[in-house]
Image 1 (cartoon, rainbow, N blue to C red):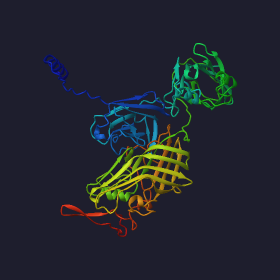
Image 2 (spheres, one colour):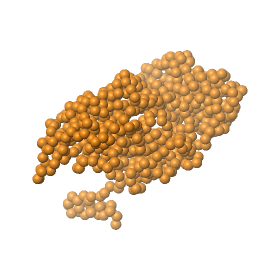
Image 3 (tube, rainbow, N blue to C red):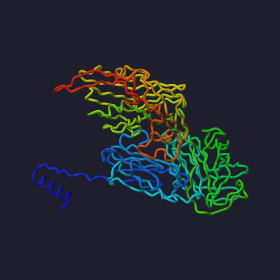
Length: 609
């Protein structure tokens, strides 16, 4: 008899006997499941896919999390040190930086643009030669419980589906959707979820026909925003007309009902054709059996402004886009070169607005900073010591020290907030706390919530510093929240901008407050270098130690990348010198601990403490 039937029998018996008996039945575990959409028909030049996972217990795999990689089925796809994948991310609860957040219910989601070919470590990987897949697996474990493989299928290189990729106007879509309105594509128009960096998404319009210097598409999109008395605004059936010399127009059916009440609107337009935009078109290009033409710019006409009930003025920019139709490319399309065709309608890829970092768009970031390597080593090799991270900071394998008990790598501090003016002037607050505990030496030191302030090539680093000591220690406890901890010098730092992200690497850090560490270090002591990364919500920040935004596929292909954090010998010598006070030493006397002395140690020539 099954467990559930036994439970039913026991419960029935309890009712008969008048006793309250509730058998403990274990809930069926939810099996891990991964979905990828879309997984077929991908544009080789780049398609945005959405990978979702359910049933991934955050406490499973000892809480280490799960790996996600995209690329060919190489032998090291599950290895901790696996390299040269197009995408590589760690999925875990309490994610920081570029990691994928895993919620308490075991769900996660990640969107990324994948291509059919990429270059990593000097090798070109092509889906034509080695099919690509989305791999999900338990991180750093031989257990296969969470493993899944989802093949990705790209269209033949050079092919492009017929259709029009165009979103009308991004600010209009944003205005309606963010305000609680509705957007309903229908009759051949769909949301173009493959378009990168442009949520709310633009649209894909089905190809209908071409001829006499025009290409026609079908579909309609209806907007409502009742809170602002927009009862209906519908745009349908866009048509491109080529005028030669790269010029063109976009005509569409437009109808609306505005203001007043829903049953008695003040302004009404019956759907009818209007020349909505003047276009500037790029030269046509062959795409398999089709012709592809990019819309370089689109400007609202006077008639188009009127069709918008004067929400926008004539000459204002509309979205760019891309049209694809059957034929052979040659000179710029005109009435004599645009063929007539009745090819079946399909969808198309899209051209989208660029991702740009501005004071309003910056929404993410991280700080890579390990405080001081010699201090991490000192605690890491001690007996009974610990180094722990909490509240949004991750201990990475970057600059880790061999032979330590606790993890001794540098720290990736999570993003909290930012005031951004430019790449040379910003203030950004990070999350997290790292605690160094050395019971045998009577102390516990915490550094938390670092804040970086940068202007004119200089800066300051603030942090919460707390020192807890036990009886007999040579220093009283210290608590200094938000103390000005260090000075920053960006003169030799490498600043990389692009694709909506900013990376400032190799920032020189020197101690500016000896009191915060009970004078263990002197003012001017060289601390570890730091890297600050910031990004717009549409940007993909590089992984820890990567070469910066726009570095290309493979820059963050290791979940914990094997990166040299110390670029030169000068940085490698930032251990303790003759100016450093070691914390203190204790020796065992009888059954207790007796404080001997604070030791000032001078290392032998060539020796690093």
